[in-house]
Image (cartoon, rainbow, N blue to C red; front, side, top):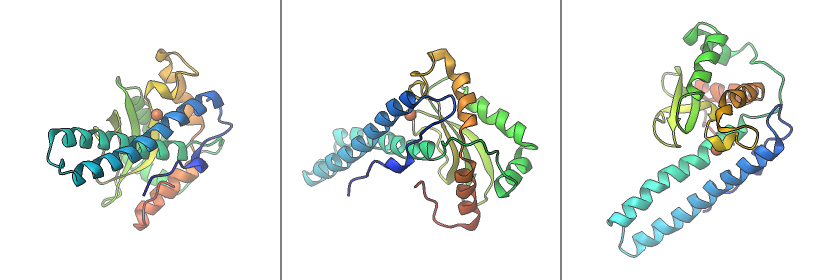
Length: 204
Ligand SMILES: [Fe+2]
């Protein structure tokens, strides 16, 4: 079964992130969905043709993890972007953040620092699905450094393509500041509550 473009996740009317930027980024997301579907078919055909143990198959399988996670992380990212002037409300997520970092501002500073790390990738606030512990991480590309038991609570894309319509390559800090103005905290809270209650963790 093919993966579908999750049109309902496409952000509109963000603050300090242009629609041209979102449209361009959205087209790249579509590419990850299409490439994941193409690799699903290609890998199945190779197995059917007895090529499952070949170097060529292993090479395509490596690409599969990259493309697949690229699709998934973009769905989390767009899903937590929303024109929203609401701060994180008093609730389970804020309580857990304060327990781990001491204050919301300390968490924010640490998360932004992860986003400003050199290299292409992602800053992600994860919740461990077993212990519920929160931690901030930098993921290189789409798949290097992901937390195997981690539920992505807040996902920030820091590939240059996420901001180069609006900024130069040196404009990552301005983009991150804009991102922080457009977090849908209701979505992040829902993800964390799903982790706490051990309900099925969904990205859409
Ligand atoms: Fe991206």
